[in-house]
Image 1 (cartoon, helix red, strand yellow):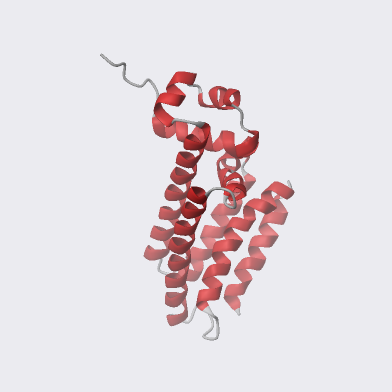
Image 2 (cartoon, rainbow, N blue to C red):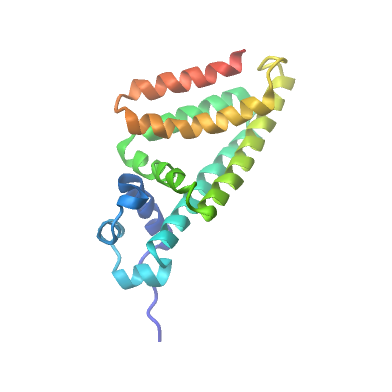
Length: 194
């Protein structure tokens, strides 16, 4: 009779996000994974496959979890402008918190793989379309309620918000000063006032 897994596969994916976020995809060794995940080598291979397989599963899990939360929040918000502001504030807070930041930076590692990996590129393309559409829908509602100006190009603004949100990871990698993240986010959000 096969032994049942003695670990929570979702929790292991969260730990993998931290490991890949900390070392990057290329810099992560098998030993880093075994130490960080707290599972045996054979369990790693049996459950997740190769390092690349685990990386892709962790990236998908992270993106699905975070993006579905953003879409739901934007859809349900009474004030789209306030919701967008809170989404950026949440991202800044996560990137300022050392433990949460480790998970967030898996996307930074994944973005590095986009030019070389069609599967990862496809994951990001689906996510981009999902989030740009969610931002666009929220911006349409905001415009119809007078929260933002009528002259805004909402498609361009939705695209900008998507990329600016990802750009915060670059800021977090380049600066340890929490104020820098806050300043960049404030400038991004100021585009909603034009």
